[in-house]
Length: 191
Image (cartoon, rainbow, N blue to C red; front, side, top):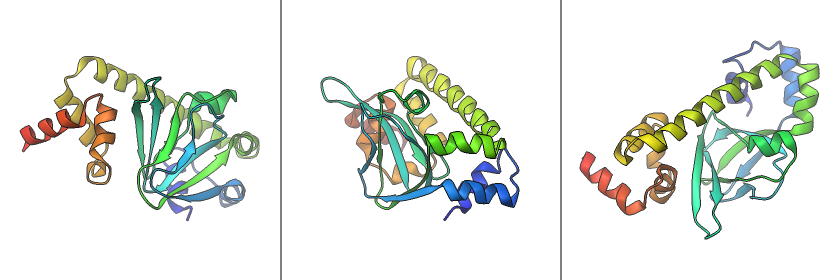
């Protein structure tokens, strides 16, 4: 159950067996139905999630009810409203499962803070994770502002290989900042 989780940690830190046991003791897991929420806008994000199977999306609702996908998190990705998670303030984003049977492994804020003390290497791991995430957000903002829709679609396909066949076209269109109809036109052009 935790194999992929520990493989992800091993990308940046080397853990001893005793440290892995301490972490595993704090881990929780959950299996989700398609569209099941892990976090609603306005709630405090109390968990940081690792996607073991399936995929999540992070999104925001506008005042007129429209949804804007900010991030897709397939297997081997992390997901949280980091601002809310770190500060304890209400979340700006919501998180929900994109696929039936999505499985997540997660830590509470309190458990993670305790693990930083008992397994100091985790602080390094999450620093690297946050730095990479921040860099990714900066690039995403630049792409949205400077790239045409067909180029954003190409980048999406490269960043999320295979995800396009697993999730709804409207989710992808929302992430790209275009309508599903326009996305269909781009797909037809590519063929």
